[in-house]
Length: 82
Image (cartoon, rainbow, N blue to C red):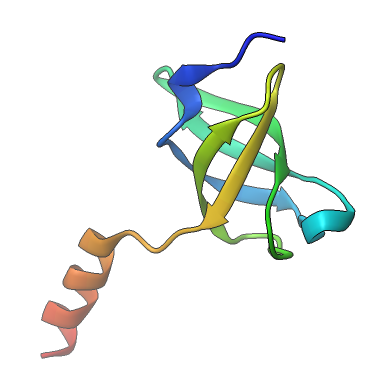
């Protein structure tokens, strides 16, 4: 099964929560100048609305993700608070 290398390193939002090892969820990923949906697997369960980073392609329309906080957004929040 061919892997989709273009999606690795892209960020997205969880549409259907992942269940860790017990099952995938669904994510909307910003890739190729638009957005696409993928089945998403994660080590730990992730809730709807969580921001994720794609760390691996599992083949046709399936990816592995981790929860992601953009460090540049975090810097912006710090500047606004101070």
